[in-house]
Image (tube, rainbow, N blue to C red; front, side, top):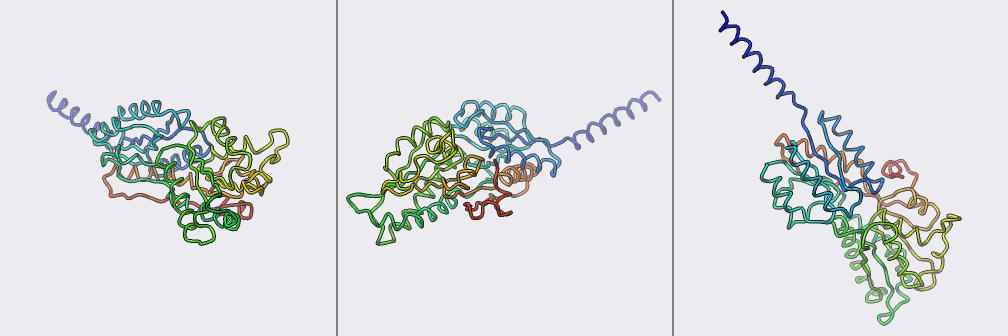
Length: 340
């Protein structure tokens, strides 16, 4: 009788363990670029909502600034050590080859978001990416910039060329792609037009960091009628620009009017949003910008990671981008994509 009781107790305990394992809440590690920009707060909101919808537990960690690649490496290592069901990773500029090798060795499904991992580091481990098509989005800004400057560029010559500056926020995938998308599309348009071909030069600048002071230093170097137009590849670049071109006391533009290379008004265009940039667009300091969908970036990152953890087939998701300026900034379909 005692043997039967012990056997029954053992079977019940085993069944409870199996049920417990079967009901284990899946864990998705989300390693972001941090919270330096409010963009990431909206990304986190999308990730949190997806986690609730799919019934999974997530982390959402990142370095204090996007310059802290060592901190992000350590955070990613820490998440790998937890053996998550999947990892969603947005890489800053840096070398993550060692971490990705470990992810492969542990057979942890890996997806990326916002910006992917450099191809030479990916080692075939990345299953899909949730991100804006950054090249296409940069191209949208180039089309607007060329349309705005075409007539003015035409007045220059091969000996005295019009200059357009590109402030590229860093050398991550997103930074490179946004700059390349702008440069390639602008060249395509300007070189195919006989009135502008060979009359312009594009200058790509990558500040030391994304801090306002470092960006402002680069903008200061462009003052004094040295450029016709300037493109910022993210919110931080726009903030640095506004440190220089907006009066802190009055909140009114103080050097943008008449400060362009030809004595006209400087044409500034950006990427993303944030309150300073939104205010600058409403007041005409910045002509317009292209917005991503940060909520969808976070939501789709977790969605892809959950599906990957179940062994489902997944593919990359283009989370979209739209142009906005003072004429449509308050339209419902645009306003829902903007953040302060």
